[in-house]
Image (cartoon, rainbow, N blue to C red; front, top):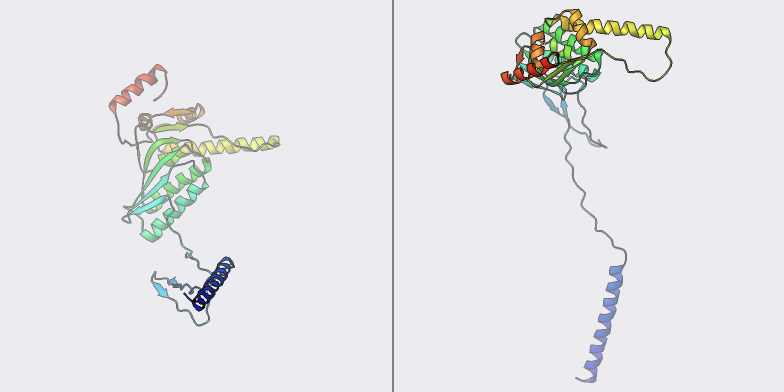
Length: 281
């Protein structure tokens, strides 16, 4: 290798090192992200007309959509605790303590059943009840609602009891046109109670509350008297001592029509045990 070749090789090596150094410096500096292509979105707008048919809406030039949202029409729909079958049977679940929310849902569901599904004579509402009671006023309101729509529209209300049917839930169950319960269902009636926040009460306040409790008792027991074999005094006696009783006792009393999985052996065992304690079963 001559002197000229050695010089060329050296120059090439120097240039390569310089290029490598500049490359490393460039890589360690701030990075720039190449521009991305804009993401395309497809916008679909549908307006539901009064006849229930969707109609297409065209956007004009310059129209902008800042956000998307769903706007439901102002109409009643079945509540989450209810379901319709074959437009002839409505199923309603009452699986908790009674409150004004249960009354609201039941009222709404009946409006939908009557207006949207033409509920009337021959239609059935199946109430599945597993409730420890709750608000006495809500219980009376539900019982009234059942009696009202049964009378006005000839709708048949069928109650299905399981677990516990107690306190304010008893008249809701009892006023139905047909009642069923599993043999393990337990019933209970007791005196109503007031929950009050600590504070002052005058003598007139207490007298007023006593009148309220008397009125509440009369209206509560009236529902049971009209849908059972017992009179007012008998129900009042049961209520006053907080009475727990079985499906067989409920059937004997007259608030229960059918025991779904009746067992003769279980019934005899209950009679034997309860008779030893001089208690009703």
